[in-house]
Image 1 (cartoon, rainbow, N blue to C red):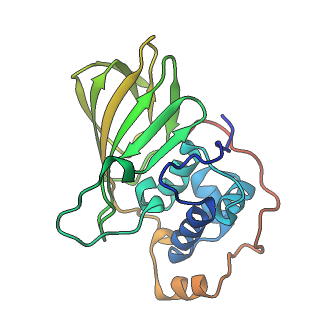
Image 2: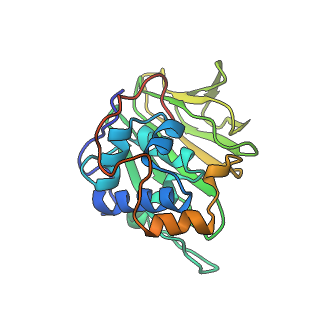
Length: 236
């Protein structure tokens, strides 16, 4: 699957420039250069640069790879944290990201300060394979329940078939994939609680934040030169 998505993939009105600025801010807060984020995510350096500059719309899988490498969720890249005790998310204000391969993810949870949790509703079209998602940090947990259709959930190469009404749990630090082999659409809910990354380079330090404010990307460059396309499985 290609790294790029489709134009206007975000239904929330968030521009690609705003998304790119959030990816860059999260990267710099962790003291990561473009090369290091590319290495951690499996996304080419040129693609990371294009996403940060807002010149290319990433697919859902690429966006998820970047979020995973940053130790956070897609939701945090799309929205600002809210501090209200009660948060109402009307249907028309929920973020929706769509992948060109024929599936979409609707984010149902708000972004809260200091909380890495995401609740989402995913729709897979007939015969759609959403691909393999990268392992999250150790201590992550994922819970799935199928609303309609049939879901093939694969964890570390072991497939599990879930019908409507079935639920499952798996550790989020395993390779996992979602596919719909049936003729009918599949809709499922996924709740994801992320553990804290153990890679020291993910952790924000005063020195790293100072480098970020200074606008240096590290690894000898600013822009999107070099790098190769993405290889292997997908992410999420």
